[in-house]
Length: 143
Image (cartoon, rainbow, N blue to C red; front, side, top):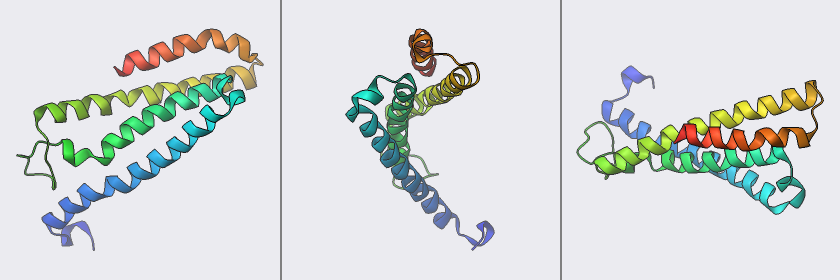
């Protein structure tokens, strides 16, 4: 069934349900990463693992927001099914989804980490100096 053949009601229901599957998979995957990093003392002391941990924490928060996305939408909205939010919940959802940009910054930081450590032979200790700046910029930019 293609889009023109789909009724508007069926299409809207599909749009309300579809994000649930991808968001749930993302929450489960990121939760496993968080658990793996936090349970291992060795992992907690590695810069690369802490960057992945931070990115995963943000992903869990944002993915949960996507999972409950239609619940945040004001209930007067005619464009979505199963809405029960208000203007404040809609604004909160927008804030959290905008916060996901922090994950992009962490992904860029991981690329920088790999470049400096693998290509240029930086020791992990040297990169730790940048780590505080990376966390500060990533979080503050998202907020």
